[in-house]
Length: 182
Length: 311
Image (cartoon, rainbow over all chains, first blue to last red; front, side, top):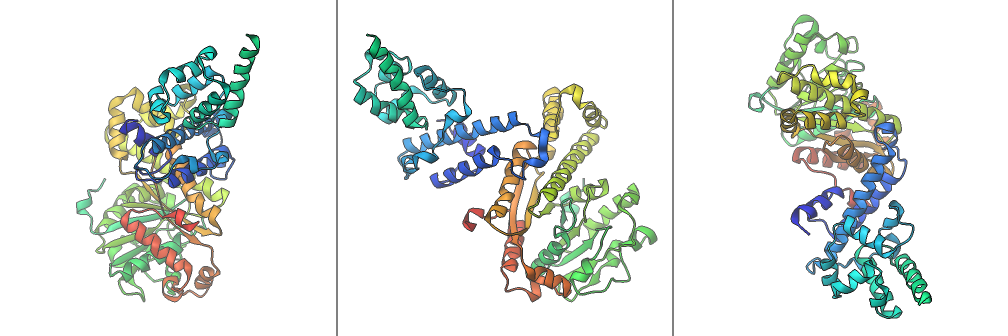
């Protein structure tokens, strides 16, 4: 991630770039709560601060959080791993996006929207880029056995800070539909 | 406006829209904190609606008030009277004094000229409630623009109005200085046809349409920041309202808020007011007094409250 991007994400979460992972988590939860509820802080603005604008801010917050989590995960000098955050508190990106189900295409779009390169995930997970591409392109015949695929999907979903249980469930459903046909 | 180097003391103006949020109380407390640090302080009561700063110092209304300035041409510095507290003098207001909207333009300029010439390290101005242009102009001429708020819907609504009006006035004045007197009002009056819904969109429109105006605004507004103090908070959720307002105003108006601190609700405050005894002298052992000292320190140092520590 470039320095400018990093700075931008910290700014969206209203943090200095010295913020710890705990600060990021606190800021994320606080801002998400603020912009998704009708607090007395937002109410007086009424139409001047429309739903559409709030949604946009929420999406920026989600993106910044996901990207910063990823950054912390891939920078060893940042000591705490994001995996220590309970799953229930992780970003549930699907709430704000138009993806009822996580197909390979949906995963690819989400990843691109967040500006995460396949090579970054590849480095992170020590997986071949080719495999990741096959997952996104639903090239099922080239994918490993279900048991292995399950683990890889789970890790891939975690990199995008998605709800990995739902990703695995949705994706494997499509995988099985394909398998039943052949 | 007036270059900083010509100024004697640093001017802090305390406003915020709604009445009864604790402006006068804060002025008396912060003034006392500064004086205890050995700074010379002049407090100016420009709350034309309900001037009572003197009573916070246990004083009856002095014979000389700002009324003498407006009606008899007295100079501001000769109106300052000593208080019981070393280093603090006071220019009292008057309930019978001139109404805010009756102040003539020339009087206003004279007032500002004399405020910056007051021979003191700190000048604290109690602005009173409301968002009248004269109130806004006094707020805008200060070195530090401070607002005080209580965590209630109406107070927040009034605060937004106050801040929006201040910013709008600042933008208009700035562009007027550069010879674009009418353009802002003109566009604002026809904002529907320009597809503009709020002040932020107006500024974005100006920046996009006239890049030179954008540069001017960026330059002039670079130092536009407002210090926020939250008063009468009762729990942690209310403390957090300060940071929520900071977030919303940054994202909605693009202006920085420095959340300098909060003061918890306490009976000791109204007791001190009822007894006409200075809070920062007679109630120094309370939690509120600690919080006010912290607010003052943060105001001096441009720092924010470490509100996460409060959880």
